[in-house]
Length: 113
Length: 113
DNA sequence: CAGCACACTCACCCCGAGGTAACCACCCAC
DNA sequence: GTGGGTGGTTACCTCGGGGTGAGTGTGCTG
Image (tube, rainbow over all chains, first blue to last red; front, side, top):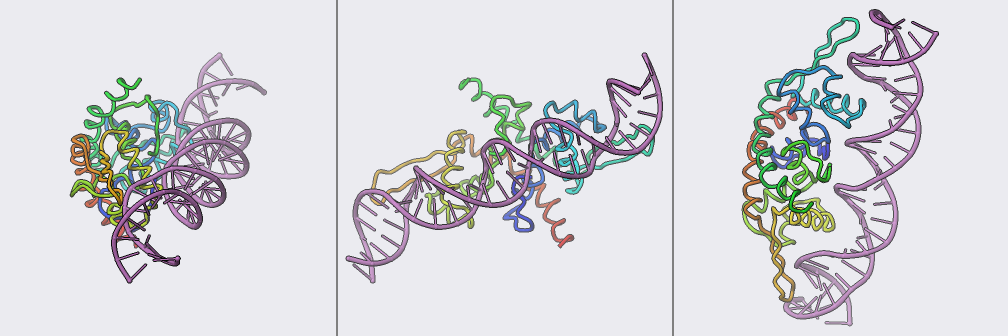
């Protein structure tokens, strides 16, 4: 999270930004939108993330009610992460932002270098 | 900005998050969506922001092409900030996220404390 | 003359998100 | 027994976003 103004949000938007404002969170959501993933799968899907940070961001997303963590008591242990209904809707709410970025940010990167 | 992975975005979404990922940026955009504002007006509309940070975030938003800065060479100096077309569209793209936050985050704050 | 408003800039500091690396317990394959 | 894969935790460190406060130059007001 970037801001964390606990309980002092001006509007729904900065509250949502708080849920989504972590270096890897939108990427995690995007990955889980396609299908539920195990920890190691997510790790491989997000090149560059460290185990510590991935675990932390997943726990925050879980605490914010957008991700569920299911533990299967097997050996070797198996943990599956998936989106809650709120998570699916959050992804939908993020979609227009993704379109905007693709249309207005990515082209600027090319023209600058 | 929170992340700034210069030129190495995975998708449009994290590129957009980079534009919008600053403590006050969505609030600035929200304020400017209603009407263009002078520096001091923005300062008063965002209680808690410091002049330094407000100036910095405005300059980043300007650099990202979502805000225009118009200087009127008068005395006392007058500087007016407004949204570009991209800025207006960005605000529109953020709207669903605001709705989601209002629906899923703000209620949780009440039930927790 | 003092003080304030304008729109900043500059120097300095702080804290926490995120990175690094080691370690854990358990099991399987070689 | 050594290495790898499972899903983590812990301690330590870095870096920079953001906060604080002072300075800037001009002109109006009290």
